[in-house]
Length: 533
Image 1 (tube, rainbow, N blue to C red):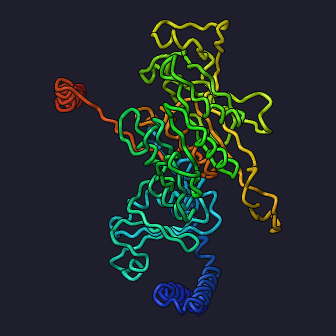
Image 2: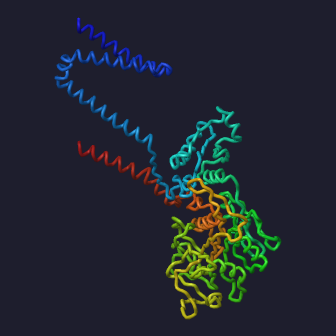
């Protein structure tokens, strides 16, 4: 009688557990009741097991039962380990990027931009469902890098109202939403995505003016050697607009100028033009001077621009830097293209470790003791096996030059770039800011920033293709524009690596794959069969 009751209780418990599982998946609204039913079923099964303990003990006393139990326990342990690993991996992100230049790893610049987020950033990928995978290869990296980033995948055909709300015109569009501002980009490349994030964060474009009228580099020129179209395009990606500026046609530097660039003038500025730059700097302006060495030994010096640099504690040398370290041979250049791998501490070169090359550069050094309470800092130096050559006549005559300290040559490392910042002396008004406690701080004023580089060709189309040159130029401009969050190594482009084979090499590989290797395998099989016979 007791055994029959226990059997009924056991079957009832099993039925209750199965019913609770079915209700849990088919009737979500009844889930609270399903839990109680499941507990009741488990209690019934436990009572049945306790009532049958003698029979169960006799069953497990058999050797086959013990082995079966051990097998079941082993399976459960392995399943538990796999479940634990799956639980951990679902909450942790770890990927290994095995590409040569790590194109699937977020760059330092992207991580800096994401670290500077002070509000949620929403990324919505509008694409067909079959195309979601291409975005899942990239967008989750942004989500893992910052907790303020959220990613969604939307099929515009299934949710047309949302696509219309964000004005999505084509498939594979990523919409970025930040503080009520939106930006759209039809790409899954890191560089395009990061540049769009920069635009939606800043909310407006900054304007850069490149001076013209004195033989400066042209930002619209695509000339392979002297053109500046490459860096102009890169500036556009960092949310800058680039325009030309002829100071002789102006009464003053435009008020909307975020940065003024003077790139390699062949003729000196007029005193009135330099006065415009001085007034611009006194009001908190930002200036990049790139002054090349003289074309000939008899070329008139850029006296007015050199004097302007000196006002900001920067001494521009009348020399040419010669580098005999041999590093330039890596780029197919000679000793008149110094290569730098040493960067003194400065925000422009923070974590910067790329080689940079400077075709025909002059020294640019801070003046000891400062000038007018302004103290410049060097941030690019050449190798110890370089020097600043002052005998320009011998140099221009293509004769052999040697280091001669008696003639004024200076042994390297030679500084070829310097930066200085100071509080603007004639700012229109104090900028109101708030400290960490939220109190107003009326003491902060606009800051003037000046960078002087002894070469302008390093950023041209001819040498700007070097990753170090382009990145350094962009870091300089972003520091001048007070966009420190953009100072980093920029996203990398995939390398085109191909294995080029001659017809003879292709024929040998074909014979190896189709005849030699299969023949060896067949031969070893025949040999093994013969030995066994």
